[in-house]
Image (cartoon, rainbow, N blue to C red; front, side, top):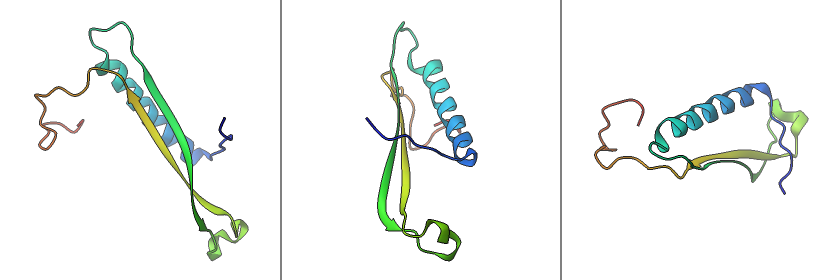
Length: 93
């Protein structure tokens, strides 16, 4: 099992908005004509091994820099073949 992750509000609020939009889109579009479906949400910590040593971060001197990877996926119907992903007609794609 993974470790607990504690993030400040400046990070958590955008995460929440992004996850809410992605899950809402899945519920709205991915499962049309189906009674069931799965939505997977995964937040993973990735330490890149670099040390934080600049003046602003002196209080964190010696700590490893950390990135997070957020993955949201569903097992829905997918993107229709009629949509040209190279030249979308809307901002949503």
